[in-house]
Image (cartoon, rainbow, N blue to C red; front, side):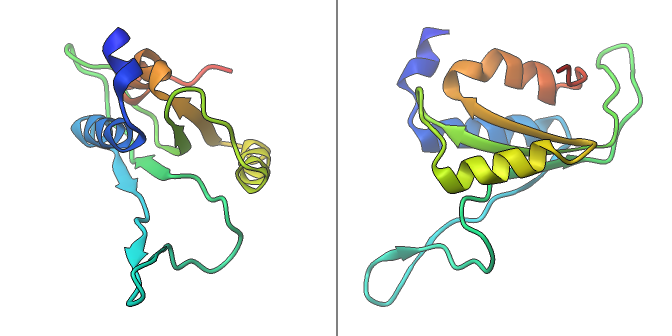
Length: 126
């Protein structure tokens, strides 16, 4: 999938969001806003480094054309290319991975085949 190598992080995120919506996932993403001084700021309370996307699916039954999806919540940090997690992002990753029933992923555009597979309804496997 060489075309994915040229995706910006925004293009990658837009692709994941569109794919999730297509498969019936609810999507949450917080975008930064510009302050009156012309700087960008994401106004949050709590710990920094929270994942880029929260994806939730209430579940669906299988049909002849598509697999079932169990009720699921996914937290996904998106990185272009071979991006790395910051220390604060890594703390969130470790915390979320320790929570039973929660799926956490750090996805890059090189993971598109897995992302398509996972959001399409194929169960998470460790």
